[in-house]
Length: 340
Ligand SMILES: NC(=O)c1ccc[n+]([C@@H]2O[C@H](COP(=O)([O-])OP(=O)(O)OC[C@H]3O[C@@H](n4cnc5c(N)ncnc54)[C@H](OP(=O)(O)O)[C@@H]3O)[C@@H](O)[C@H]2O)c1
Image (cartoon, rainbow, N blue to C red):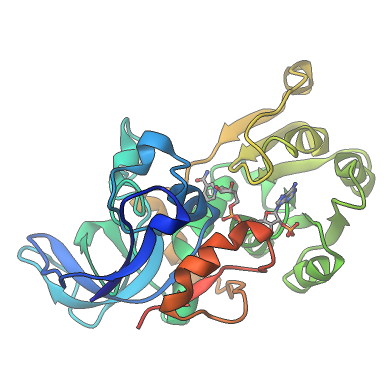
């Protein structure tokens, strides 16, 4: 079989498409023939050893996201049959409840081998079924970005979503899922982007109001202007360093910032009294557990959303090139790779 592997150095020169032995499922495992995988900014960081010791040891198969068809079942597996479609959950070590200690040992695509391969063994209990209405390409987008957006929304007080105001930043995978899920849950959504063309696409996906953060650098104030000076109940904070203070400004009193990412830097200088004087909550979000996946899939069964995917779907050979180009931000929606 073919697989992508970061072989001998943590750089894009070290990332190669290579031949490997097709595995057999061990006890409790299922063997998936991968149909499609998708990219996350995390995967880009991973190639450059962006997670340090949490990235794992070389060689490693990258990517956390994908979907496959079960082609063999190991001893002791119950309730899963050959032909089923299953999604490997992001963090194999987090079954449910609070994030356990040392949990990052279970993350796919670093430190565990990930999804960028034609065949993959995974613990049957670490997989989730996928609603039938998703195509393989759509299903492959749900592993990391969607579960993170889901947790940002469902872990928050209910007022943040149903009838509340949610602010999303930019048009990355997490932000688009947050927009679509928040709309499905009954929120009013304000979304930002650097491009007017992308703002139009955000409105087509359901955003009620949009702001161009390049043209309006004080977009936190603009959110107050759109909300009678009140602010958003929940900010889905994917930017980090450069965006955090604007997000703080855009959050209403007693509101919540779900801190998720750092596409715009990892360090922010924060005027702390603005947090405590106005009772703002800062909550770190770290993907989700296997139980969260099952809850999200059950929700999606009844609330079908169409994940936004960048056009075109890429062939397997283009995975490295597509991943390296990710920071250029030319994509809209998830970058999906067909595995064949
Ligand atoms: N905590 C977790 O569990 C978790 C899970 C998944 C992802 N993450 C993190 O969340 C972040 C987003 O991930 P992703 O996969 O959604 O990334 P992505 O798809 O690569 O997002 C890229 C988008 O970020 C937007 N962006 C860049 N600079 C921005 C800025 N200054 N202000 C607002 N938006 C900006 C751009 O939107 P426009 O082009 O529209 O301007 C760009 O298209 C990453 O840092 C990732 O590592 C964390």
